[in-house]
Image (tube, rainbow, N blue to C red):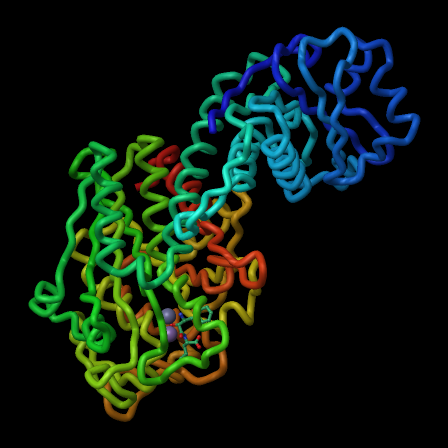
Length: 500
Ligand code: BES
Ligand code: MN
Ligand code: ZN
């Protein structure tokens, strides 16, 4: 999809379709009024007849609107003007985009960014329009034998802005939106691909391919033999039961001079989590192909970072493995030694994410990260606590937690903080090792976070539990591409403030 920004009057647009908003009840937006004036009351007459109430998502396609240069005008309902918020805005953009894609218009000019949303500026609306339009057209068809292409697909969306004065800032916002949309789509593709195709080796190949598309990127993949040499006993204990070799993927983006300390993003890359010997129940087990969405989020954010050419150094680290039951799999009660030297009693082999992550977090230290962030579909408990709307955020450094919370709020990909208090640590006590890999039923998301915190003590670290947010279940089953937007916004803010 091609996206553009431009300013100009709606009646003067030589295009297949001009899109304008109508608020409930039957109130014209500015652009609708302009068209109405040019057409001697064509739009208002229609509205008066009751064809367009303005309810959110309602659409009305008009042909031959007098004194306009466009082939069509699409009226779209936006709901009550004072209830018009970020979610309605996204919904309207998505509705319009799918509608046009299924109709005959191959290009269109949207007069939607001019609509008022409290506390959001025009640049924000440009970024969001691109993200929402691109997401609306996303389809995963790699694994279908026939592709369902639209007959006359929408190819070009022009976003109209009220004044040329904002052109420069809106063009930047457009680029941000495009980079995020592309990163989100990459993350969705990787997430949606099933475990038999998306293996640790496949993820490593995709990281290589991504690095080959950008001169500022390079990629390195560690094999099991390398992990053994490094003493990654925790990571290797998870992959023992799998026929697929584990990989530790290192994706480097260098956008600043070498001396600048990197931000390191670690993503859980469990390409299928059967639970191991602590086998999961059969219902919905297919969804455990999504257990690599942390890895997908890291790749998506790095892709966006490279597309935007941010003046930062960022390293993506992805420990990737399957978790399968097998005669050689790790067993409840096994004790393994992590790269940090700490011993871990594996009381439940299904708590494998923290086992692969702890070694990756220890490994990350050698890069002397200014900031270390991991993202992982880590606990069902986090999904119970926060549902599918907010990522669970835990951190040992409150300024970092706030940066992430704010980035999420700004871009509309929100996280919510959970406490990492000392009081919870005793739940992780083991009679036989330094730490147990589970902490009981209470506060399961927090004890998982605390487990990781034992490996990140010297660093400014944050953990995003994306178990509830990385994919949706039910008949709309699919990866969401979250938290690519949050991370990209965080990196954009870092690049702007050069806080390190
Ligand atoms: N990948 C799962 C977490 C998960 C479960 C994400 C359901 C989304 C939906 C993780 O590896 C896991 O199995 N966690 C266990 C931990 C428990 C054994 C302490 C869980 O959450 O049940
Ligand atoms: Mn598990
Ligand atoms: Zn898992």
